[in-house]
Image (cartoon, rainbow, N blue to C red):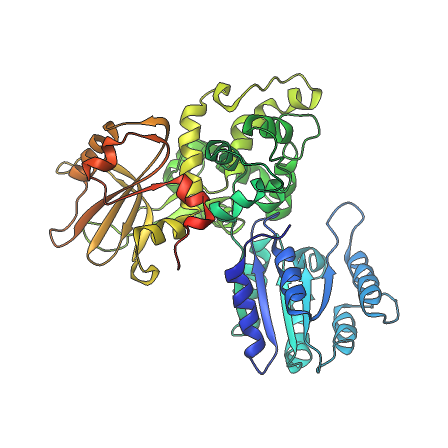
Length: 482
């Protein structure tokens, strides 16, 4: 079941209009559907498709293993003679010979970090092959894909050898909320928006997880089946995606994630929490976690000056990761033994607080939809990020869930998920705005993004410039044109 990705498909399709070969890097969180996207692109365009995939690193796997698998896959898909190439120079030479310069071909090198893990010469051989062989084929789109985004980042995107060579750096995000809702429309089922948001708050917009949702079950039943049953998909999933994406220094990186479980922190706060030094090692770990899609880095502009904020904060940006850290991992042994009793999300300890963080994460990952519904041109936005104004001797502190800034406007976005949202939300936001320092030349517009039953008096009051419900964001028929 392929859903969404129309923007990425159009970006890829545009490459056919070039008179020369295209090199594409494709990055994104594991299970987000990177290789599926490329396969779908080839299928829709009815072109030749070749997929060569690296072998997952484990005991006994080495460079010989990778070369052997390369030769076997190439023979199976192209009909060429099956034999193990001696090295990567010869492997890529053999590959280039089976590509027809008169036939449109999508070539996917999947899990490239695994493929090149055991030979330091691999990136250099790939560069040589591209420059002298693949780039000469005007009908070729060659895609380099992998779950270890940091490998592609270091070896390709930031490598001097590959400067200027990639035609497209494709970043595959989670599915949007309205795309996710399609997984509940299978058959005759019609789930409530509350049930859908409950599940998305746990798993996010990851296609692999959503494919395992049973639309005939309630949110609590689905979450129990996926997260709290022996052998369930999401019980052991974290170890797999975390270990594959980050490779080394896993212990320290895991500790950093745990420290961010209760909300965003500055690098200094992370260091203090973990008893570490705020140095280059910590910065490198944070950068790798960000590149792998586990955390997000929020900077934005200082609304009082219009200049970049000198405070950097990191937060968990993956719904499943936080849910795993807070609720699955502490109970994992009991879950595997079948002795953990899960009744409902509401009965999980601290869920009301965690629900707020999970819902905020979901909204941040759907920022483009929020911007559309406010009616903003994406190109006018200078900054869009959570904002914390620290108290000083002259100003009070305040925390804004999401601050969207243009040259003349500041949108103060309040993100709320409650069973019932009353007029008190107006007072809450007004207090924040009264503390927020902004120039007199800038207009401030309050915005409410919510899930729950909103008192009719709130929109009638006219305080919020925009009120955006999750029901609107889930409903594809309510979408606005980009």
